[in-house]
Length: 322
Image 1 (tube, rainbow, N blue to C red):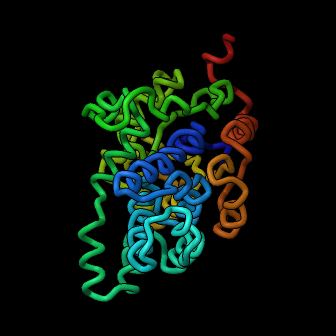
Image 2: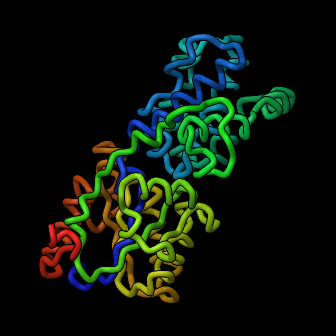
């Protein structure tokens, strides 16, 4: 089946681009800014990259904003429960993020599960008060500004007010080496990024010409993984008959599975799922094996090298000229 591939669809974060120092750190910076503005203390390490990974591994948190809304709700709940505004105290108080995300995984993951888990712990009055203080739009704004900085207007269409100067997006680093892209294979993207984040991210990497605009599906198209609609739209835009998706999270793999169960007859043939370990790392490997990913690779370049061998070893024409 790999030898018959006619198209490859990529996730971006953790697959094409290393976001450990950008989006991952935007959670930490946004938390420090948000809780600091409330007058809390010791807020600098309330949400660390490993905490963000825990939400991703729980499933249903392909959107970083959903993950941010969930940890915000958890901390607001714990602040009330323990009568504390000390970030260090609240970080270690139960349920910790590790405990909370483990519970969410059992519930099926996602923001709705987080809301349900917290609401069950509250009286009606407590929940009404907590929900009133759950300022998602305020946190989203800080997250956006932390990530994009001076590029805020270009990425999101408004000027940054709180966080100015270079944004964390400038810390994005390329994982993909375009020389490994197979020749004669159509390339597409299916990402949880917005269209602005995608365009600017690809431009910063120097990849504006690698992925046709019409073959990019972003959050702006109305789908969130693991909704198989994102895969169906990507396949339709590419005209793919034998596609492979390369992702890095449980939601990516589940989206492919759901596509194959519900959409493939309308949209083309079976989609193969390749999972790479550069996003969530080896912590995700056992889950990918258990869920029967078609390929698991250390990184996108290793995956593409294997694909190239299967289809005859031809590489991207632009790279042949180097």
